[in-house]
Length: 301
Image 1 (cartoon, rainbow, N blue to C red):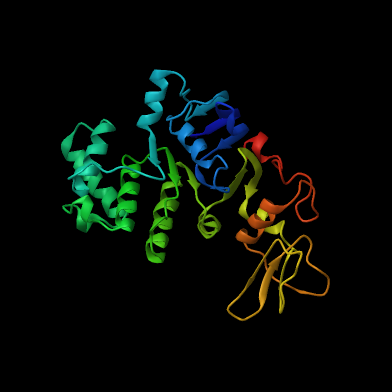
Image 2 (cartoon, rainbow, N blue to C red):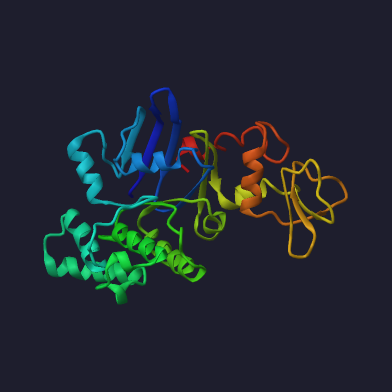
């Protein structure tokens, strides 16, 4: 079974620490990666994509050591990577761009390569635009094109940095179907700010903050830790972690714990994430273990 393992991995840039003592084990399926800007999510993905070496710790990707040049090449042959930003060559058509990336992935046989290009363009709904110049595409179409190149060859490890940026709701739902199929046999790591995508897709969620893992477990486990902390009221509460006026005119508020006598609401993943982000190290909803793993980080959940 394909696995990815990080053991005490850290990454520093001079005096600045991007990641500190991160230990994770990833298996086939979709893992959601949440965290604020600057939490270290993109750094983590770039290390797994063999773009960056770790400063400390050990990294094993699909059974290979990326620190060794030959093994790093082996990882790249089995890898699909969608960075947060991707540069497109000037003048390329949709088909030519994906075909070019397939050549870089060592697809030397033209007929089979072209069949694969058509397959991945079909997966992202761009098969009807194969001859269109990239410069004429919309932002959402470019994002889907970037995803298509990551899917070439059916990668064993698929790394996605904000894949739904610029996609409309229908396209996001279609993407979820594609990723669910890929995850049957591949390790998929999805970094996003969209908690609804994680809630809809992921069996597991990892939350990074300040370069450290502060939660690692299932989505229901994280959501359940906000039980009793979310409520509806006619007024804002001064001690709420977050509070906003809903379409009904009532306020949805989050605090640990909810004040007595209020109408409790079913928490969402977003509620739990906001509470986790604002919580101290020991709070009644999350407990003292919330800012570390509940066991799954160390034990390879």
